[in-house]
Length: 159
Image 1 (cartoon, rainbow, N blue to C red):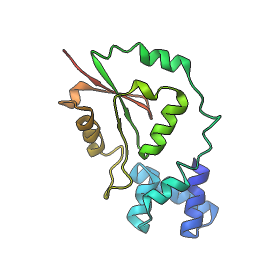
Image 2 (cartoon, one colour):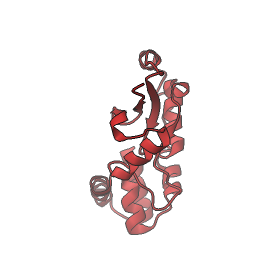
Image 3 (spheres, rainbow, N blue to C red):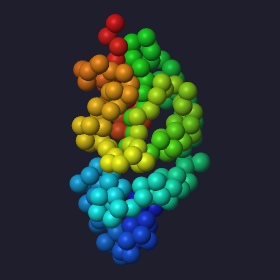
């Protein structure tokens, strides 16, 4: 993914390879997503970025069904927790990854960084976590368990 992001910086901002990598890392650190910095400073179209970066990733064959992960998720007592996806990616990428893993049917919904809505918010901003809680139907953050870096978040139903 870093290669495609850096290529995007080089192509659309006319940067050298080193400058593209530096700015990519700076925006990731400062904003949580490189695309956030690009939108803020260069007014790029985030949906175009998504098409050229996330959706262009050759994931077929890299990500394959994971039976162990599927069994782990199937063992969750959904009367007590609501499996919910929570990603900084745009919806197309999040859906693609869980489909390739063979677990797309085990989640009740997805909260994603909406590149089509300005201004968009992403992790680590508190508003993104509030959005996930709201969309998952959690009444408070005390009812949420965020598991993993990219794909799994749960809403806990204490009843």
